[in-house]
Image (cartoon, rainbow, N blue to C red):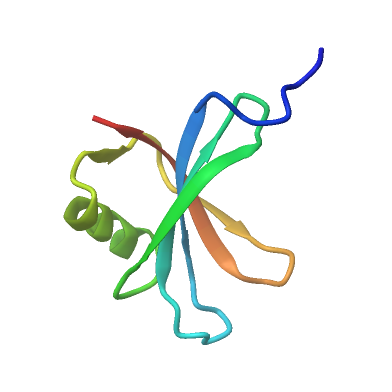
Length: 92
């Protein structure tokens, strides 16, 4: 199968929130959109007051009230030891 060079579909949308493990001072949430092949189509991020899923949920309710989290938050640890969480999302 030949994959088109430019993603044209928006197959999966998910949120990612982080723990400021290394004290960079940048607390934020990302909203990623991927195509059916897992390629990133687009993303946006915004700052939040605190780290982790609870702060991310509050920020989504405030900043993007038409965006729903559609799965539980899944905790992961990056290769460099940073805690982060991902959850599926969809527009109402």
